[in-house]
Length: 181
View (cartoon, rainbow, N blue to C red):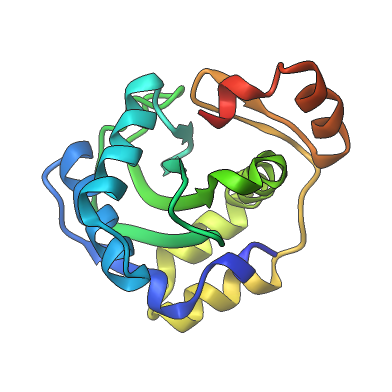
């Protein structure tokens, strides 16, 4: 279940965009307004992370994310695009599902496990297809609330997102830091 960070207000279905930059900008502005954050800081955070490497994970899904010092709790959104866009993902499939996460810089130790959980759920084909068919925000949220966690991992950008049981060892060695930037 990945919904504790996501609320119905954070779900947008069939957003029209002109491409990756347009999608990230629109999503960042919506999240910033909903959370009372500076829009430019959120936009810059997502763009800076994307400059590091694509957050596309394949199969039409992207998980843009940013660590921010000005927030004390995570903020998330789920966006289904009206038309899929190129996101430079590992399989070159166009993206139509975007789960965006803003995470407090003060809680980085919990970030990789949370990102891993989100990734695992969205890599499940049944979840993706049900989200693509959802008729409302509350239906999309219900899909995410009831989905059991699969056990496989996935790649986000240039780093590997790992299962929770391995994250502490990698964090203490410093190896996990490249993914969280």
